[in-house]
Length: 134
Image 1 (cartoon, rainbow, N blue to C red):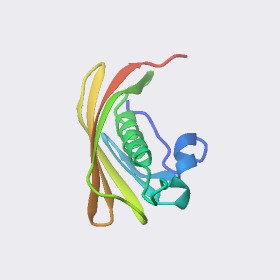
Image 2 (image 1 turned 60 degrees about the vertical axis):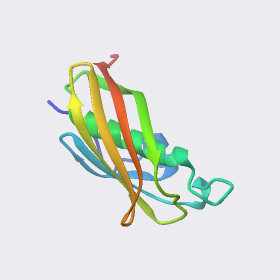
Image 3 (image 1 turned 60 degrees about the horizontal axis):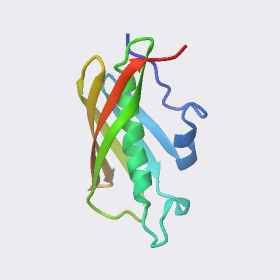
Image 4 (image 1 turned 135 degrees about the vertical axis):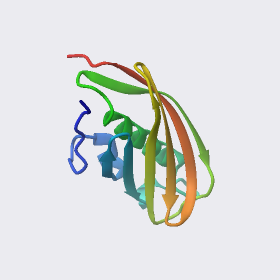
């Protein structure tokens, strides 16, 4: 039975709340999240910090995988690779994620991050699946 993940719940994902990330879609093996570029998220050159985009992809992957987990299971990031394609200075980012493969202990996912019609980053991630502590 897949787990339920609230899309509009303040406090469920404190780090996401901190950077302004919200989920708009959580379906079996897929997620979509959004983030409005804010001046507090820019680097000293006025460009969105790469860590924000990476965090967005990581959180989107966790959300997508969470929808596929059984009761009592949890997950953690084992590895993420991200390729930045364009600089971002403003606008809204949309991250679409899908589970490519889910085994019993390992899952592989892919994300794309868009700023309007521009693809700004692609990411892939490997996640560990384990029994959650009670």
